[in-house]
Length: 263
Image (cartoon, rainbow, N blue to C red; front, side, top):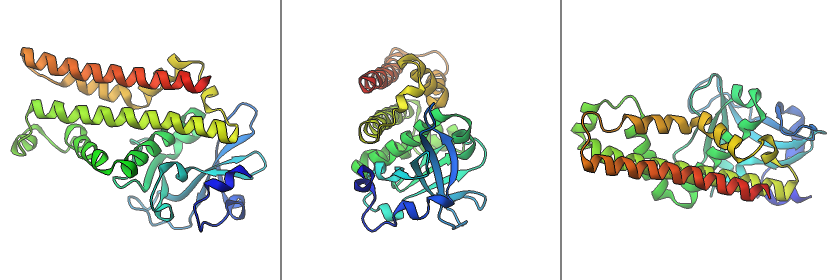
């Protein structure tokens, strides 16, 4: 079977534990493919005792395993990779070192399209594992520009003025673009290798881009609007235009990849 090539060396065949899995979502209209969570029976997670840690796999309608999604993280130590399902709808995230994806259980059960949230976080893991320095810089930049615990006075004390914050934010946007681009590449690989066309969950590229905005891009667009309080200088306007151009590039890249993948 094709799926065998994707099981990490030394792993236990998924077929032995699939019957203990938890169905999360059907991934196609015909109900031939499903998303399944398999607990590792360890209630101790990195964040909350109410979270669940384990594997997320794609299986067929007969509960036969197809692929363990962690393989798309490109982790150098897949034996340490884990998924954490959490209650509520806080932001999904990927661990700084590319071996963890935290995802909302509610969102996965609400809408099949939200499998792309998993693929997006796996995209972050891919960047982390393939380009660790670039990912680490973006991770730090995200904390400094988007984390509400850092108030303006804190940032000033660290030597981060509005100009530096815009520069950091551009790193975040580029990182998000790379992660979404990788998510589409993963979906394309799933389509070619296993016959599951996740792109069919969307009407067209416009529908997909609208979903991406609702899934998180809007928060970055909103943050961009907040930059440059007071009367902007010419330099402010140029920097803001550069960030706008980055967001436009983000959208164009994602749409182009989606259209290409649909062919």
